[in-house]
Length: 106
Image 1 (cartoon, rainbow, N blue to C red):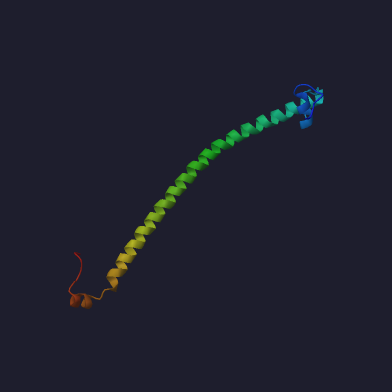
Image 2: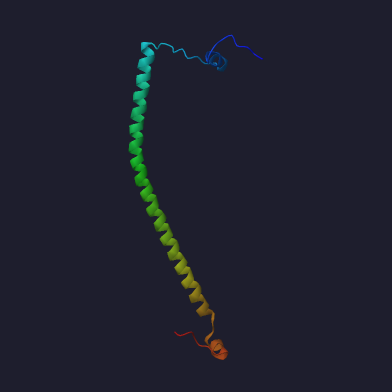
């Protein structure tokens, strides 16, 4: 068994490479920290402004998707009409009379 000569949790801290002792900060370190926090706060405010733009962009994107869906539905309808119209044009009237049908209720 390993016997530790140190008591408490300080032995574990040293083994982990850390210490509970706090280093005293210099005036320059404090000023640098204040400047860093000030810049971070300004960046956060800019990001808030961009978030509003993000909401507007999301709204525009949703509208664009709706326009695309409507356009796709329109194309599908047009294609369906073209296929239905092409099917009727291919049928020869004489052949239709011989086969016994001239139309389907038109």
